[in-house]
Length: 468
Ligand code: GUN
Ligand code: FE
Image (cartoon, rainbow, N blue to C red; front, side, top):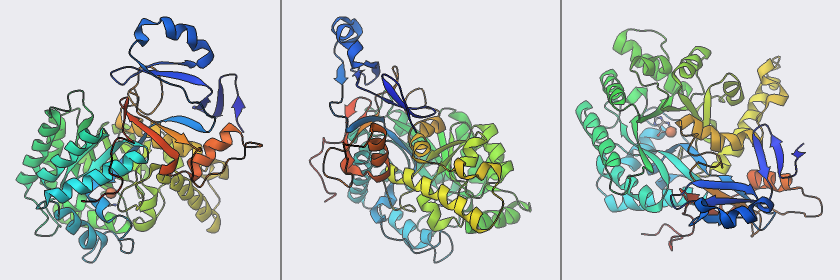
């Protein structure tokens, strides 16, 4: 049920549809004005600060201007094989990483034109799907990562880009020494921070240990030291993702330190890698004690529901984590999750929540207070997680994730106007119904415009396919 005001419809706590408003964007790409259209006319004509601004007013009740979506976890090089490789478990000698991932990532090192092509495709595709900010895992090697930074700047996508670190348990031809990992991590941070096209930064650096099993304790310590030297630098990795990964991490820790039963969270924390600038992917098997550590450190979880159906052997208790106060946003986890679309990630969040509830029922467990039917996540929570939740996870909620005066104009227009899977019945569909149809059924055909920092980024390229 929605509450209707004169100028807005409240869809739920914190989620408002503003009716017939005007929004002004400054030359610098900031939102400088947002008010009902009927109030605006006189002010617009006189206001000094609104000179040289662009104005947006949607003409149709089939269009919604939304804050841009934030993909908290995506592997840019894996875009080359997304849609395949859906048939193996994550780890092991014949697993997904060894069979598909490492060869696809390694290939880019000696084929920089291919790296550019793959990265142009992933940036363009995610932009067209409304992803205005992406947290990208790159590859091990410096050069392809620099190309990824260049492509994000060229295409105008806000991004965090990390050089993936591995110094053990990786193929002999796709691994680096501790020193190479550290050196190239530092070089990529420097490249991003001093890039001539990145003065008011659109691309931010990222410290990126792949996951515990492929990083020696010495490498994790050294990465923790780099993080301490660069307090503004974000950190990301995978945490307690799957049953096989959790067992492998523990086994290695017993070998390395003789410690039994330590969790990924405790290990990352011991290397000072959990900070309020850190986003850890998955977290399906986090204990309550782990969740407490993350909360105390201000570390966020990137919930990747589609990927979890393939690898995790469990469902991330997203609603429970939100209720206990942990920071959570969403990731596509391309190519572990096959879809680059954040709308898809949002609706899979709802399906995952429903299936967790169904499992409780099927196991004839008494549902706990946190897992009752009415606490299932719905499309509104998923929309929050895909936008403002992601911004809060990154600590960028004063800049992106919402449409308010003072914030960057990172946004997209969701439209039911053209040919798509959505049919609107004007005789009975309310505005709230149209919005819900778009979130539940929409795809890139329903995303007519995308803006990052005020620049329109969806329709600028001639290329519509990712040809050489
Ligand atoms: N764990 C370590 N590397 C990866 C990866 O590339 N994808 C996923 N989903 N999990 C990982
Ligand atoms: Fe991943």
